[in-house]
Image (cartoon, rainbow, N blue to C red; front, side):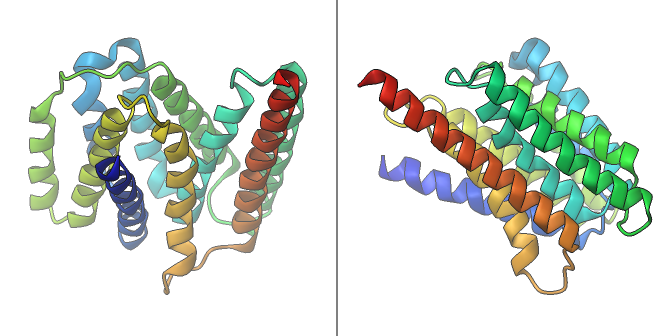
Length: 246
């Protein structure tokens, strides 16, 4: 258990490094770098693996078109989707949370359309959908010991092309997936659920804390509101579930 806790913190630290590397690269991350983690699990991923690969390709293509803070903040939708479509949820919860998410995203896209925030509304919409596909693929992903280790060799040409931050992103993402696969085998504690909350939180928090990175106020407010919505919804569903069991 001690090793698992240590592994959890290492995974969270990888998320911080990944977010920092993306910010330092100024979005200059080739699509190949985001494909490598998906290619690594593709042999045992099946349809879920193909969906993850497609989501990472789309996300990689949109990285140069969107502010880095937006590209990192959009992953806060993962805990939102996890809570919305949990076993404790119902149609009313899905409808209310979806309305909040859509309203906040429309606010961000309107700000972009008005020229007060970088990026474009369409890219924001595409990235949000890519995150949904990635979450859905991860939810239906069954772990295995079969991996495409050859895909890690693709880091070498990325590094040789003078893109060390992109190579670091590829390795960090692969490391996080490998760690989540290992932790998912534990029956004593659901680390993957905790990681769904932690990784998007610490990744964006790293951008806020580190100097030299300007996080636009609308992005920070929307990220905070989405995280708060996910937490409050999860808390309400947990309390309601406990009352029904009593």
